[in-house]
Length: 268
DNA sequence: ATAAGTGTTGCGCA
DNA sequence: CTGCGCAACACTTA
Image 1 (cartoon, chains in turn orange, cyan, red):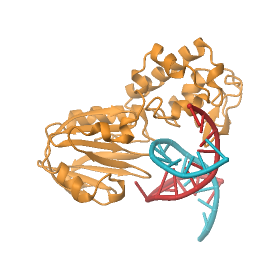
Image 2 (tube, chains in turn orange, yellow, purple):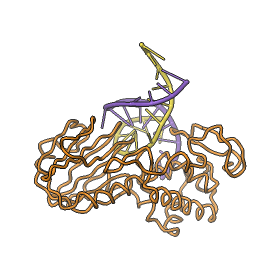
Image 3 (spheres, chains in turn orange, red, yellow):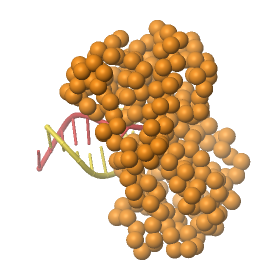
């Protein structure tokens, strides 16, 4: 589950390792994850020089000399920079560079690799409609985003068009740190709840980024991140005791996603 | 061995 | 606007 911390780290790694490289060949094993035909994809990116990469929600947006490469790893996957003779077993799309290195992209379920021509980002609806990056939202902006909303807090936080980058793995501890039940109605939140929730998002993501993000994902060079189960307070800890009140952590179906909560600390 | 569950997203529908 | 069910490119666990 690449969420904001993973994508943030991958963007940083791409900037460190891919800038100035020129794409000399492209192999697409899975055309379904493209937004254009294989022919158009290759015509767009062959010969292009990699420039800056930035993170936008769960998307990686790479500028090149011939347009933009946009990647969404869906529910998990890797971007591996390897020697061409040492390709990983599984990859769906591959970019070869002139110096013998290859960027191999894989994802295990639902990913996107898109090409957008120069100046066309505004027409790429999947990224154009994203809300502000969760880590970039100030506390005042966060209050404004929530003002007048009716639904439930978890649905809002997971809605990428409202605020981008939060997924169903980090959200367990984000809500726990804020003392909020996932099904809590936004309209019942007090100002201090919103302040604390904003702080929780910042804290959780910063802690993960500081450790190189999730340890179940590989970075560009194949190393695992340092943020893992030992860093979670309630997430994926069903039946264990709450670190604050020692009540037993519960796993609950909340709408179409599963939630891990402390029934004491996160009462409705 | 078979089936359910899972980190994402867009869509249609109530 | 909000919620829900569904489907789409695997893989792990019960």
